Length: 78
Image (cartoon, rainbow, N blue to C red):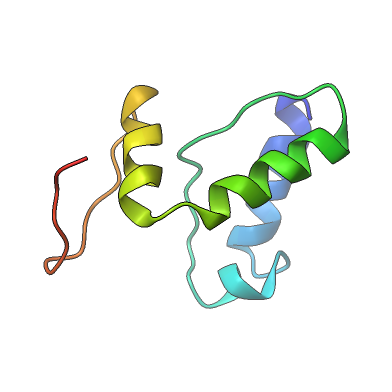
């Protein structure tokens, strides 16, 4: 997905036209992206990331110099 498509997808999610999950969690903010050679590779990678525990996702984003605010009740160590 090139930069234009990514911006369009984020805009759709922020406008409530994306996935049902993000509809009630607006506005959305992109914190991590990667490029893949095929849509199927990207979808497999996305599914694998979604299965990770929250702390593993936080570690992944920290490795890419991204910060995500933690809820007060969660441990901040990765």
